[in-house]
Image (cartoon, rainbow over all chains, first blue to last red; front, side, top):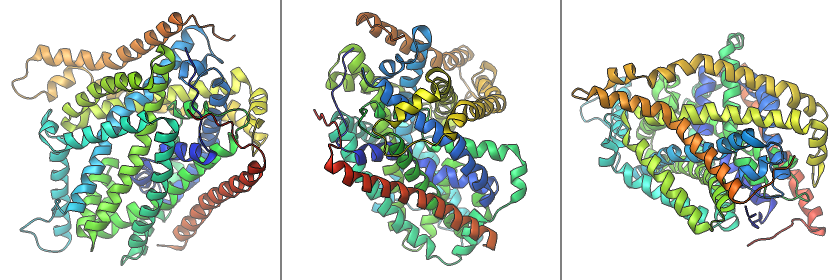
Length: 527
Length: 45
């Protein structure tokens, strides 16, 4: 395996790339939805505790481990070979490469929704006003219903294959190739240059929308819906679980992305302050911008029902309706969905880099070859997800298995390596190299005992609560029950078997690829 | 919006904003220091 000689051009660049990777739709849509559902202002208590005990430790451990492992290369196998060997090395590396690649395949589809809405609002081609309703609460409900129908038709969630007859397919392909074009430009000219423009644009646009929202009539009622605390919520375990989950996904830890990016740093470069800066920028966007815009504006126009929408419902049904009802909503709707698009593309862009790096280092490919192979591979999966759009089932399945299950597994492995394999003492020495800030002593205890325990508990509860549901969705009986009339039962049963085996098959393929890349280059794993 | 909600909102915004400003301050002050010393092992290709 050869080592890429690319390096970050500046410290601000790497911080902005990592922060923009973490800032995504979850900051603007998921966080406010979770907060209002789980205790309003009271949600901030478990949220901040989770940030300190779970988010920051995992985040900082990734920065330190990435730089430690980046001495021989920047792909997951090159990084993890410093800490693991044999089969555990192959499996962990395969998961670390597979997670961002597979998340990219469906995230780019969601990204295209944002761009479509931004263009629709800008061009005035979205009309959610029903012709026959009169102004009032019923009128607002009718606008929401129209918005829901618009979304369903746009993404093709009424029937498999219908997304290919919608304009969304063109936007998906555009987003798809834009991502690969930017990644082809390289670490500095592509990722870093784009993040340096995208993050300021995102912040400026967000403040424009924030000022508009804060100057609306009845804004205090909207803010009250978001922030008035329900202290009794703290007695429910589910609230603590939701807060931990939100922090975990918000910081994008356990994706294998930070590991790759920090591997491009040298021992003269800081990791602790850089990691903290990226995390704090993400939290600023989430709490200040996400917390003050989404729910307050939704409550003002749609009332208490705004709390009942999920992440997609909030983002692509409720908020388009809100902007349709708001004075100057066409402009602010366009700006808002442009913000979401920027947040999404900066995240999706960073998801491709680990796969590209692996192909370059593992198989001695040049950038052009690596980009071509990965784009062809991911395009085939993305098109499958777009095709199986009924109730967004393929997207939902991929999100659960990759976006939750694999991420928890990888984060737990990383924290266990940091706390028990490397050891906090040695890791502390490593973290001090080039550091502009030192880790507090308490970090050692937290990363060794508290964080792994919390991760395992959360993982167990998630698995207990959600695993049976998702396994059921893959069963032949369930697929037969939702199959359209006239479907051949044998084909439906075959589809069930395929959906059960697809993630295991992909993981197996990547394990094999990593094994082959090791063998072909006669790698020696470091003991 | 009640007083508790307002207090939590202001406290939350203050915490995350202070953390972000502190990090920016540390980075900027260290940047000046690093300018006097080689800041990065830059090997752009």
